[in-house]
Image (cartoon, rainbow, N blue to C red; front, top):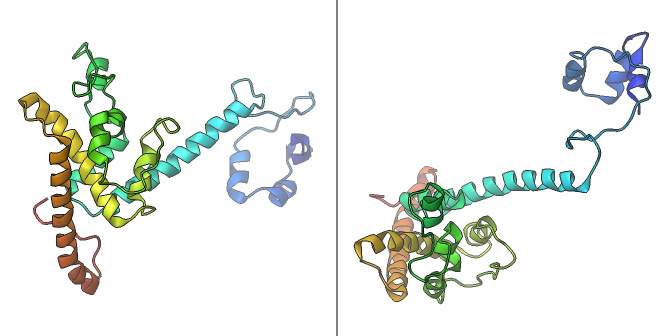
Length: 237
């Protein structure tokens, strides 16, 4: 199909346009003057700077769309997670890479050494804090079932988080996952006051917190079901 086929006697061929295009798209076409060039039509790829089709630009567009869908899924899953509101906010910051880690402090020229102060590995990135640090691994051991081994295959945190938050695991795991990640980050901040907890202590607190959250949700669930309300919230958080 050529552009010339949509032109008749120096004007846009409305009949031909309506045969192939929506009225909304046609209204956009009318905003452009009818081309008068005599050169033959050529195929172009608007997503590439040189208008030449390439697989690379196609993959870039696919990744962008996939990223938008994944971002929507992450937010929806975070909102539905049975946990405290402060933990939901933390999960949102975590998955948007908005935590003030040593890597981020280094980027802002606040510190020079960006390595992890717990394992002496480096650098301390968002994903290192909650997933890749040996301390984090030891803390999660025995708490989370069916954890995917994505360390070497998935460099980003989104899909790893979504595994537990989307319901593909189970509701208990989603609460434990959220609480564990939050407590791991809180423990990092406590390091500045020399109050670092062991991974066994964090495991114990996580299990207690999970029980408190689920008890609160079970007590309120009948009220929300009867009243047609939304997701129950843990009082005081």
